[in-house]
Image (cartoon, rainbow, N blue to C red; front, side, top):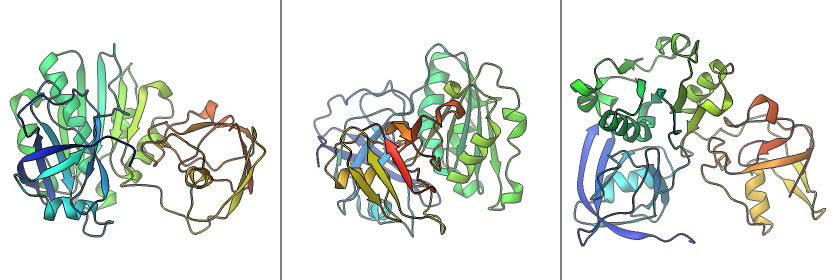
Length: 318
Ligand code: FES
């Protein structure tokens, strides 16, 4: 593990919606925590040893505690189950310093937030700060299955959120999903932030093609990684600077293959939303599976954590 982890004490743990658990973490000596900005996340080592990323959903001005919110995924890989079932008040969790791949753009006077399910967590720190500072106007559309599955529902019903927040329940029926087009039809100089399940983010991306790409921001933590598709094929990547040629099997990303070959490649979300792994493309026609690249960038760049090559060959500027 190459990142520094600090033990933080679990000061509180509570179920704030069905299967959604909020933790407050503090330093054992009561000291101040590293500062963070809205949209930041930390990596947390679950009691079973798995590393998981969680947004800091609390007030960035409060240096005494970090708030993280965990959705217990019964069929996940086990990290969230361990957090939900095994992490107890008074115990310690090992936590990285905050990092922000989803920062609020500065100098923007109007924001649109679209959050689905647990995707509300980075948005909570944003709206809390905007409420406190009054630095910009915003609207938040928050999509959940039903009332019981809605984290922060009491806080979002408080007067400071009136007129700014619309909570929509679809009952788990895709046909009852909120019609997003009225929100997205006119960009009006706003910046759009979307965090939630992959289908929601892809729907928002498809409906925001007329927005400036610099004004559209997505975030997830791999919980909604694009699934391997039944028609995925193996392909090859040639590294232009060294001439090395690597095979990319089905089920393996270009990023993983480069690392397995000993290359040091930067990444963060590994789900095509943060932009960290953006790589210049020398030749080839990728199947772009990210939510980051603007149309005009797709001929010259690729997000190597998710995208593939249906044509069998890519040449990367590495
Ligand atoms: S690591 Fe975030 S887009 Fe690839």
